Image (cartoon, rainbow, N blue to C red; front, side, top):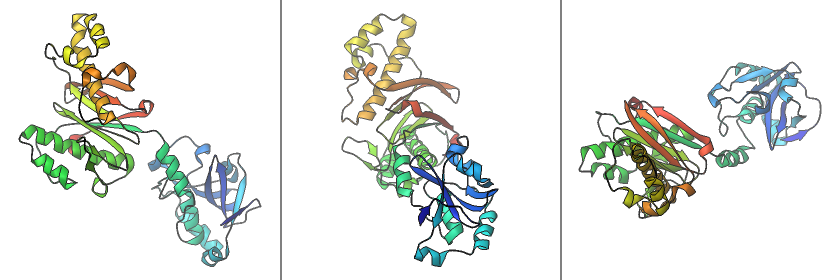
Length: 334
């Protein structure tokens, strides 16, 4: 498809530019341009599920940009639908949803109306941009008290779960994996069964398609997802054993700990422990030496949450803390 600056006629495929990308539609008249959602610059940010095929006037479509009209090449000209078919098909789609930035966007829609088949010239550019955007989704859920432990993917994880001698640990490992399965599909639209997930030499599970981290404590499980390395840790708020400060704190932190009122010491140790755990996971090191991890130098964030009536500290270590999003998942969905 070639693109020219000229006046459109009914049935033309048209586009406008925003940044390095284009927004596409089907021209019927100056009062009717049919498109899969308005251009991002012409509307408030919407979730993909709320974007729908709609009709607008030319002014709304362009939103201050300039107009380009598609001119089909010889091969495309043979496939091009008749004008009345293009317009009829486009109008029949008004109200339709199912938008996906990579697989079902405005360009896919316009090409399908015009040629009868979906196509997007921007897929790789959009994919690159999409994959470069910062993201940090954290999912937490209650550990179900009952429920059958079923087979999970990959087989190595399944073997690991069933090899646990403790019933409680077995359930924790199973349900945190089920939460990972749920999170991967919700955040990335990926089925866990279709991903290559392996355990590295340091004993950490990893995936080449995204970064994830797992944690469980008490009656809670947590999963964090990102495009960059990260670590998550959840800890039930409880009394810490005496003397722990000598094993987990740096010299600076010991001085800080000593100066605290006695009523603040337990909380301080819990926060430091969960922060050091999350940093350790993000660094992907073979051995955990909390006394050498200075949390003041790390990108970590801790908050208190409540799950099933119990209070927990949830910490994540990530360079994308500004994009942090917390999602509570009912255990029935696992």
